[in-house]
Image (cartoon, rainbow, N blue to C red; front, top):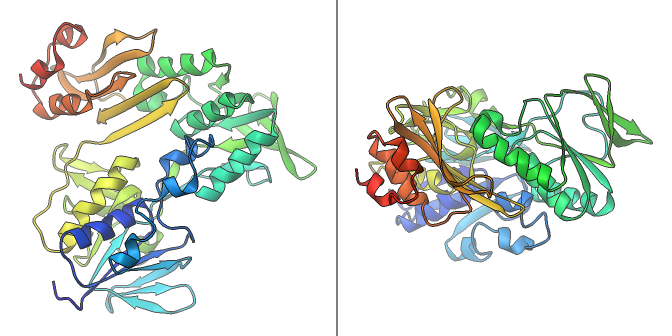
Length: 412
Protein backbone atom coordinates (compact mmCIF):
# COMPACT_ATOMS: atom_id res chain seq x y z
CA UNK A 1 0.00 0.00 0.00
CA UNK A 2 1.23 3.50 -0.84
CA UNK A 3 2.32 5.61 2.11
CA UNK A 4 -0.06 8.41 1.08
CA UNK A 5 -3.19 6.25 1.16
CA UNK A 6 -5.86 6.89 3.78
CA UNK A 7 -7.66 4.14 5.67
CA UNK A 8 -10.72 5.26 7.64
CA UNK A 9 -12.34 3.37 10.51
CA UNK A 10 -15.83 4.42 11.58
CA UNK A 11 -16.45 3.34 15.15
CA UNK A 12 -13.93 4.32 17.84
CA UNK A 13 -14.70 1.18 19.78
CA UNK A 14 -12.74 -1.88 20.85
CA UNK A 15 -13.15 -3.18 17.31
CA UNK A 16 -12.02 0.11 15.78
CA UNK A 17 -8.99 0.39 18.05
CA UNK A 18 -7.91 -3.17 17.33
CA UNK A 19 -8.21 -2.56 13.59
CA UNK A 20 -6.04 0.56 13.86
CA UNK A 21 -3.47 -1.33 15.91
CA UNK A 22 -3.42 -4.19 13.41
CA UNK A 23 -2.83 -1.81 10.51
CA UNK A 24 0.23 -0.40 12.22
CA UNK A 25 1.41 -3.86 13.36
CA UNK A 26 1.23 -5.02 9.74
CA UNK A 27 3.42 -2.14 8.61
CA UNK A 28 0.85 0.15 7.01
CA UNK A 29 2.48 3.58 6.84
CA UNK A 30 -0.37 5.56 5.36
CA UNK A 31 -2.92 7.75 7.09
CA UNK A 32 -5.24 6.06 9.63
CA UNK A 33 -8.29 7.99 10.80
CA UNK A 34 -10.49 6.63 13.60
CA UNK A 35 -13.91 8.31 13.85
CA UNK A 36 -16.28 7.87 16.79
CA UNK A 37 -19.32 9.66 18.15
CA UNK A 38 -18.28 9.10 21.78
CA UNK A 39 -15.83 11.49 23.41
CA UNK A 40 -13.98 8.80 25.39
CA UNK A 41 -11.00 6.93 24.01
CA UNK A 42 -11.92 3.47 22.66
CA UNK A 43 -12.73 1.14 25.54
CA UNK A 44 -13.85 -2.38 26.38
CA UNK A 45 -17.53 -2.87 27.18
CA UNK A 46 -17.74 -6.14 29.19
CA UNK A 47 -16.64 -4.47 32.47
CA UNK A 48 -19.56 -2.03 32.18
CA UNK A 49 -21.85 -4.75 33.52
CA UNK A 50 -19.19 -6.41 35.70
CA UNK A 51 -16.18 -4.95 37.55
CA UNK A 52 -16.63 -1.32 36.49
CA UNK A 53 -20.30 -1.38 37.45
CA UNK A 54 -19.39 -2.88 40.82
CA UNK A 55 -16.71 -0.28 41.46
CA UNK A 56 -13.87 -2.81 41.32
CA UNK A 57 -12.04 -1.04 38.47
CA UNK A 58 -11.74 2.50 37.22
CA UNK A 59 -12.27 4.00 33.80
CA UNK A 60 -8.59 3.87 32.87
CA UNK A 61 -8.67 0.06 33.01
CA UNK A 62 -11.41 0.04 30.38
CA UNK A 63 -9.18 1.48 27.67
CA UNK A 64 -8.66 -0.72 24.64
CA UNK A 65 -5.14 0.70 24.14
CA UNK A 66 -2.90 2.89 26.31
CA UNK A 67 -3.86 6.54 26.22
CA UNK A 68 -0.68 7.59 24.40
CA UNK A 69 -0.75 4.81 21.81
CA UNK A 70 -2.67 6.75 19.16
CA UNK A 71 -0.29 9.70 19.05
CA UNK A 72 2.74 7.44 19.22
CA UNK A 73 1.48 5.48 16.19
CA UNK A 74 0.16 8.45 14.25
CA UNK A 75 -3.49 7.41 14.36
CA UNK A 76 -5.82 10.39 13.99
CA UNK A 77 -8.63 10.30 16.50
CA UNK A 78 -11.81 12.11 15.52
CA UNK A 79 -13.78 11.65 18.73
CA UNK A 80 -17.17 13.19 19.33
CA UNK A 81 -17.87 13.23 15.59
CA UNK A 82 -20.70 11.39 13.91
CA UNK A 83 -20.45 9.83 10.47
CA UNK A 84 -23.76 10.48 8.69
CA UNK A 85 -23.13 9.06 5.24
CA UNK A 86 -20.82 7.34 2.78
CA UNK A 87 -20.27 8.60 -0.75
CA UNK A 88 -19.07 5.40 -2.37
CA UNK A 89 -18.39 7.02 -5.73
CA UNK A 90 -16.15 9.71 -4.28
CA UNK A 91 -14.91 7.32 -1.56
CA UNK A 92 -15.67 9.77 1.23
CA UNK A 93 -17.22 9.52 4.68
CA UNK A 94 -19.62 12.41 5.35
CA UNK A 95 -19.61 13.83 8.88
CA UNK A 96 -22.32 15.71 10.74
CA UNK A 97 -21.94 19.34 9.76
CA UNK A 98 -21.17 18.51 6.15
CA UNK A 99 -17.41 17.96 6.15
CA UNK A 100 -16.02 14.80 4.59
CA UNK A 101 -13.06 12.45 5.01
CA UNK A 102 -11.63 10.65 1.94
CA UNK A 103 -10.72 6.98 2.14
CA UNK A 104 -8.91 4.39 0.06
CA UNK A 105 -10.29 1.64 2.27
CA UNK A 106 -13.05 1.95 4.87
CA UNK A 107 -13.86 -0.24 7.87
CA UNK A 108 -17.28 -0.02 9.50
CA UNK A 109 -17.03 -0.97 13.17
CA UNK A 110 -20.19 0.82 14.20
CA UNK A 111 -21.28 -1.78 16.76
CA UNK A 112 -24.81 -2.02 18.04
CA UNK A 113 -27.38 -0.24 20.17
CA UNK A 114 -29.67 -1.48 22.95
CA UNK A 115 -33.11 -2.47 21.77
CA UNK A 116 -35.63 -0.06 23.28
CA UNK A 117 -38.61 -1.29 25.23
CA UNK A 118 -41.69 -0.23 23.28
CA UNK A 119 -44.13 0.21 26.17
CA UNK A 120 -45.57 3.26 27.92
CA UNK A 121 -42.94 4.70 30.26
CA UNK A 122 -40.08 2.97 28.42
CA UNK A 123 -38.08 6.19 28.14
CA UNK A 124 -38.97 7.69 31.52
CA UNK A 125 -36.31 9.01 33.86
CA UNK A 126 -35.00 6.17 35.96
CA UNK A 127 -35.20 3.67 33.08
CA UNK A 128 -31.69 2.62 32.11
CA UNK A 129 -30.16 0.92 29.09
CA UNK A 130 -26.55 -0.25 29.18
CA UNK A 131 -24.12 0.30 26.33
CA UNK A 132 -21.75 3.15 27.16
CA UNK A 133 -19.65 4.31 30.11
CA UNK A 134 -22.21 6.97 30.97
CA UNK A 135 -24.93 4.31 31.07
CA UNK A 136 -22.89 2.20 33.50
CA UNK A 137 -22.24 5.27 35.66
CA UNK A 138 -25.97 5.99 35.82
CA UNK A 139 -26.82 2.40 36.72
CA UNK A 140 -24.07 2.40 39.35
CA UNK A 141 -25.61 5.53 40.87
CA UNK A 142 -29.09 3.97 40.72
CA UNK A 143 -27.85 0.89 42.57
CA UNK A 144 -26.30 3.10 45.25
CA UNK A 145 -29.50 5.14 45.65
CA UNK A 146 -32.13 2.39 45.38
CA UNK A 147 -33.53 -0.21 47.70
CA UNK A 148 -35.16 -2.23 44.89
CA UNK A 149 -34.50 -2.49 41.18
CA UNK A 150 -36.39 -4.21 38.39
CA UNK A 151 -34.38 -5.73 35.55
CA UNK A 152 -36.30 -6.43 32.35
CA UNK A 153 -34.64 -9.18 30.34
CA UNK A 154 -32.91 -12.32 31.57
CA UNK A 155 -30.03 -12.27 29.11
CA UNK A 156 -26.35 -11.77 29.86
CA UNK A 157 -26.57 -8.01 30.48
CA UNK A 158 -29.67 -8.29 32.64
CA UNK A 159 -28.25 -11.08 34.79
CA UNK A 160 -24.88 -9.40 35.22
CA UNK A 161 -26.54 -6.15 36.31
CA UNK A 162 -28.79 -8.13 38.65
CA UNK A 163 -25.75 -9.82 40.20
CA UNK A 164 -24.02 -6.46 40.69
CA UNK A 165 -27.11 -4.98 42.35
CA UNK A 166 -27.67 -7.99 44.62
CA UNK A 167 -24.01 -7.96 45.63
CA UNK A 168 -24.54 -4.34 46.68
CA UNK A 169 -27.50 -5.40 48.84
CA UNK A 170 -30.29 -4.11 46.61
CA UNK A 171 -33.51 -6.09 46.16
CA UNK A 172 -33.73 -7.23 42.55
CA UNK A 173 -36.56 -8.60 40.43
CA UNK A 174 -35.75 -9.98 36.98
CA UNK A 175 -38.63 -10.12 34.51
CA UNK A 176 -38.13 -12.48 31.58
CA UNK A 177 -40.56 -13.48 28.82
CA UNK A 178 -39.19 -17.02 28.51
CA UNK A 179 -39.63 -19.81 31.04
CA UNK A 180 -36.01 -19.46 32.13
CA UNK A 181 -33.30 -16.82 31.80
CA UNK A 182 -30.90 -17.52 28.91
CA UNK A 183 -33.22 -20.25 27.65
CA UNK A 184 -32.76 -19.35 23.99
CA UNK A 185 -28.98 -19.17 24.35
CA UNK A 186 -28.17 -22.19 26.51
CA UNK A 187 -31.22 -24.45 26.40
CA UNK A 188 -33.25 -25.66 29.36
CA UNK A 189 -30.69 -27.82 31.15
CA UNK A 190 -27.98 -25.19 31.41
CA UNK A 191 -30.37 -22.25 31.77
CA UNK A 192 -31.64 -23.89 34.96
CA UNK A 193 -28.16 -23.52 36.43
CA UNK A 194 -28.30 -19.74 36.02
CA UNK A 195 -31.86 -19.55 37.30
CA UNK A 196 -30.75 -21.43 40.41
CA UNK A 197 -27.69 -19.22 40.82
CA UNK A 198 -29.79 -16.06 40.94
CA UNK A 199 -32.53 -17.56 43.09
CA UNK A 200 -29.90 -18.75 45.58
CA UNK A 201 -28.54 -15.22 45.76
CA UNK A 202 -31.90 -13.71 46.55
CA UNK A 203 -33.02 -12.44 43.16
CA UNK A 204 -36.74 -12.73 42.48
CA UNK A 205 -37.29 -14.27 39.05
CA UNK A 206 -40.58 -13.46 37.34
CA UNK A 207 -40.54 -15.80 34.36
CA UNK A 208 -42.88 -16.30 31.42
CA UNK A 209 -44.11 -12.72 31.85
CA UNK A 210 -44.45 -9.76 29.53
CA UNK A 211 -44.12 -6.11 30.50
CA UNK A 212 -47.03 -3.90 29.50
CA UNK A 213 -45.92 -0.65 31.11
CA UNK A 214 -43.27 1.01 33.19
CA UNK A 215 -45.23 2.98 35.73
CA UNK A 216 -44.16 6.52 36.51
CA UNK A 217 -44.56 8.64 39.64
CA UNK A 218 -43.55 12.30 39.77
CA UNK A 219 -41.77 11.94 36.46
CA UNK A 220 -39.67 8.91 37.41
CA UNK A 221 -39.99 5.18 36.92
CA UNK A 222 -41.73 3.66 39.91
CA UNK A 223 -42.34 0.09 38.87
CA UNK A 224 -43.22 -2.41 36.20
CA UNK A 225 -46.73 -3.49 35.26
CA UNK A 226 -47.02 -6.95 33.73
CA UNK A 227 -49.46 -8.15 31.10
CA UNK A 228 -51.47 -10.01 33.75
CA UNK A 229 -52.06 -6.72 35.56
CA UNK A 230 -49.69 -7.31 38.45
CA UNK A 231 -47.39 -4.50 39.49
CA UNK A 232 -43.77 -4.68 40.69
CA UNK A 233 -42.52 -1.69 42.64
CA UNK A 234 -39.02 -0.45 41.82
CA UNK A 235 -36.89 2.63 42.43
CA UNK A 236 -35.17 2.13 39.07
CA UNK A 237 -35.55 -0.09 36.02
CA UNK A 238 -32.77 -1.57 33.90
CA UNK A 239 -33.72 -2.86 30.46
CA UNK A 240 -31.65 -5.53 28.73
CA UNK A 241 -33.75 -6.99 25.93
CA UNK A 242 -31.09 -7.38 23.27
CA UNK A 243 -29.24 -5.18 20.82
CA UNK A 244 -29.64 -4.07 17.23
CA UNK A 245 -26.64 -3.72 14.88
CA UNK A 246 -25.94 -0.16 13.76
CA UNK A 247 -26.34 -0.78 10.04
CA UNK A 248 -27.68 2.65 9.04
CA UNK A 249 -24.51 3.89 7.34
CA UNK A 250 -24.12 0.71 5.35
CA UNK A 251 -27.78 0.46 4.39
CA UNK A 252 -28.00 4.07 3.23
CA UNK A 253 -24.85 3.56 1.17
CA UNK A 254 -26.44 0.60 -0.60
CA UNK A 255 -24.36 -2.15 0.99
CA UNK A 256 -25.98 -5.55 1.46
CA UNK A 257 -27.63 -5.59 4.90
CA UNK A 258 -29.35 -8.57 6.48
CA UNK A 259 -29.10 -8.99 10.24
CA UNK A 260 -26.02 -6.78 10.05
CA UNK A 261 -23.79 -5.65 7.23
CA UNK A 262 -23.16 -8.76 5.15
CA UNK A 263 -19.47 -9.55 4.59
CA UNK A 264 -17.49 -12.51 3.30
CA UNK A 265 -14.84 -14.46 5.19
CA UNK A 266 -12.40 -11.60 4.52
CA UNK A 267 -14.83 -9.18 6.20
CA UNK A 268 -15.34 -7.45 2.84
CA UNK A 269 -18.75 -5.99 2.00
CA UNK A 270 -20.47 -5.89 -1.37
CA UNK A 271 -18.24 -2.85 -2.06
CA UNK A 272 -14.60 -4.04 -2.39
CA UNK A 273 -13.31 -0.86 -0.73
CA UNK A 274 -15.49 -1.24 2.37
CA UNK A 275 -15.15 -3.78 5.18
CA UNK A 276 -17.09 -4.40 8.40
CA UNK A 277 -16.22 -6.07 11.69
CA UNK A 278 -17.57 -6.56 15.21
CA UNK A 279 -21.22 -6.50 16.31
CA UNK A 280 -22.36 -4.94 13.04
CA UNK A 281 -20.87 -7.59 10.72
CA UNK A 282 -22.82 -10.61 9.52
CA UNK A 283 -19.78 -12.55 8.35
CA UNK A 284 -19.45 -15.78 6.40
CA UNK A 285 -17.76 -18.28 8.72
CA UNK A 286 -15.77 -20.93 6.81
CA UNK A 287 -15.92 -23.49 9.62
CA UNK A 288 -19.72 -23.36 9.84
CA UNK A 289 -20.33 -22.69 6.15
CA UNK A 290 -22.83 -19.94 6.89
CA UNK A 291 -23.07 -16.30 7.91
CA UNK A 292 -22.89 -15.50 11.64
CA UNK A 293 -23.24 -12.23 13.50
CA UNK A 294 -21.49 -12.57 16.84
CA UNK A 295 -22.10 -9.91 19.49
CA UNK A 296 -19.38 -10.80 21.98
CA UNK A 297 -16.10 -9.28 23.16
CA UNK A 298 -13.84 -11.88 21.55
CA UNK A 299 -15.27 -11.13 18.13
CA UNK A 300 -14.74 -7.38 18.56
CA UNK A 301 -11.19 -8.10 19.67
CA UNK A 302 -10.05 -10.50 16.94
CA UNK A 303 -12.24 -10.01 13.86
CA UNK A 304 -11.05 -6.42 13.14
CA UNK A 305 -7.45 -7.62 13.03
CA UNK A 306 -8.40 -9.95 10.20
CA UNK A 307 -10.29 -7.13 8.50
CA UNK A 308 -7.24 -4.89 8.71
CA UNK A 309 -5.08 -7.52 7.05
CA UNK A 310 -7.68 -7.97 4.32
CA UNK A 311 -7.73 -4.19 3.76
CA UNK A 312 -3.99 -4.47 3.16
CA UNK A 313 -4.56 -7.07 0.46
CA UNK A 314 -3.45 -10.09 2.47
CA UNK A 315 -5.02 -13.52 2.06
CA UNK A 316 -7.33 -13.69 5.08
CA UNK A 317 -10.17 -15.93 6.19
CA UNK A 318 -11.62 -15.28 9.65
CA UNK A 319 -12.65 -18.58 11.21
CA UNK A 320 -12.17 -18.26 14.98
CA UNK A 321 -14.81 -20.10 16.96
CA UNK A 322 -17.33 -17.86 18.72
CA UNK A 323 -16.38 -17.31 22.36
CA UNK A 324 -17.91 -15.47 25.29
CA UNK A 325 -17.65 -15.36 29.06
CA UNK A 326 -19.49 -14.12 32.11
CA UNK A 327 -18.88 -13.53 35.81
CA UNK A 328 -21.88 -13.57 38.15
CA UNK A 329 -21.54 -13.90 41.94
CA UNK A 330 -19.08 -16.78 42.45
CA UNK A 331 -19.71 -18.25 39.00
CA UNK A 332 -17.30 -17.68 36.15
CA UNK A 333 -17.64 -19.41 32.81
CA UNK A 334 -16.35 -19.53 29.23
CA UNK A 335 -18.25 -20.77 26.19
CA UNK A 336 -16.76 -21.76 22.86
CA UNK A 337 -18.48 -22.94 19.69
CA UNK A 338 -21.94 -22.39 18.31
CA UNK A 339 -25.09 -24.32 19.19
CA UNK A 340 -28.43 -22.93 18.06
CA UNK A 341 -31.77 -23.64 19.76
CA UNK A 342 -33.05 -26.88 18.29
CA UNK A 343 -29.75 -27.42 16.51
CA UNK A 344 -28.35 -29.97 18.94
CA UNK A 345 -29.47 -33.39 20.10
CA UNK A 346 -28.30 -33.56 23.72
CA UNK A 347 -26.32 -31.82 26.46
CA UNK A 348 -23.75 -33.85 28.36
CA UNK A 349 -22.32 -32.73 31.71
CA UNK A 350 -18.94 -33.49 33.26
CA UNK A 351 -18.40 -32.58 36.90
CA UNK A 352 -20.52 -31.16 39.73
CA UNK A 353 -23.57 -29.40 38.27
CA UNK A 354 -25.27 -28.64 41.62
CA UNK A 355 -21.97 -27.27 42.91
CA UNK A 356 -21.59 -25.19 39.72
CA UNK A 357 -18.21 -26.65 38.83
CA UNK A 358 -18.67 -28.48 35.57
CA UNK A 359 -18.33 -28.58 31.80
CA UNK A 360 -21.38 -28.76 29.54
CA UNK A 361 -21.17 -30.19 26.02
CA UNK A 362 -23.74 -29.57 23.26
CA UNK A 363 -23.79 -32.50 20.85
CA UNK A 364 -25.23 -32.70 17.35
CA UNK A 365 -26.78 -35.87 15.96
CA UNK A 366 -23.93 -38.30 15.44
CA UNK A 367 -22.23 -37.06 18.62
CA UNK A 368 -20.27 -34.25 16.99
CA UNK A 369 -19.45 -31.53 19.52
CA UNK A 370 -20.97 -28.16 18.61
CA UNK A 371 -20.12 -26.11 21.68
CA UNK A 372 -18.85 -26.43 25.23
CA UNK A 373 -19.00 -24.31 28.36
CA UNK A 374 -16.62 -24.57 31.30
CA UNK A 375 -18.07 -23.31 34.60
CA UNK A 376 -15.58 -22.61 37.41
CA UNK A 377 -13.14 -24.99 35.71
CA UNK A 378 -10.22 -23.24 34.09
CA UNK A 379 -7.47 -23.74 31.50
CA UNK A 380 -9.60 -26.07 29.40
CA UNK A 381 -11.20 -23.73 26.88
CA UNK A 382 -8.60 -24.18 24.16
CA UNK A 383 -8.89 -27.95 24.47
CA UNK A 384 -12.67 -27.71 24.23
CA UNK A 385 -12.30 -25.60 21.10
CA UNK A 386 -9.97 -28.21 19.60
CA UNK A 387 -12.61 -30.91 20.14
CA UNK A 388 -15.21 -28.72 18.42
CA UNK A 389 -12.87 -28.07 15.51
CA UNK A 390 -11.99 -31.74 15.09
CA UNK A 391 -15.54 -32.43 13.90
CA UNK A 392 -15.18 -36.10 14.82
CA UNK A 393 -17.80 -38.04 16.80
CA UNK A 394 -17.13 -38.07 20.55
CA UNK A 395 -18.36 -40.73 22.94
CA UNK A 396 -20.84 -39.01 25.31
CA UNK A 397 -19.78 -41.37 28.12
CA UNK A 398 -16.16 -40.27 27.67
CA UNK A 399 -17.20 -36.63 27.76
CA UNK A 400 -19.01 -37.19 31.04
CA UNK A 401 -16.19 -39.24 32.61
CA UNK A 402 -13.79 -37.01 34.54
CA UNK A 403 -11.27 -39.84 34.41
CA UNK A 404 -10.93 -39.45 30.64
CA UNK A 405 -8.50 -36.60 29.82
CA UNK A 406 -10.05 -33.94 27.61
CA UNK A 407 -6.81 -33.83 25.61
CA UNK A 408 -7.34 -37.40 24.52
CA UNK A 409 -10.76 -36.45 23.12
CA UNK A 410 -9.28 -33.50 21.25
CA UNK A 411 -6.73 -35.82 19.67
CA UNK A 412 -9.21 -38.52 18.68
